[in-house]
Length: 85
Image (cartoon, rainbow, N blue to C red; front, side, top):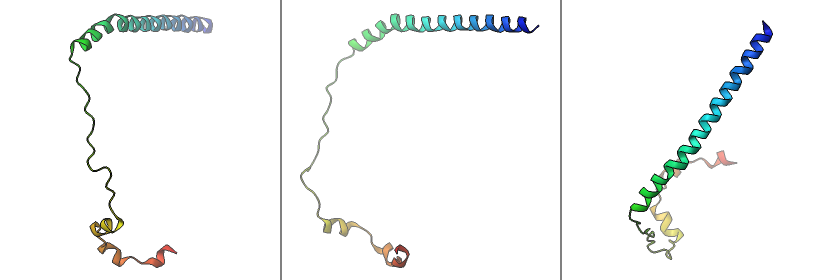
């Protein structure tokens, strides 16, 4: 009984492996023959030039004082500095 099961498992795995190989070959052939249609469709579309991002005032760096004016420091009044020791 046991040898029949082992032989059955071996045959099943061989059939499964053969099916997997057929699947891989099918995917390779599909990519090979259908890729030409995709390439033709890409070549027919007009090529759009890439736009460069515009950087405005790249040389201007704000001062520290200007940054502190914009901050809301009212939340820091209740801060207890003894917690940071």
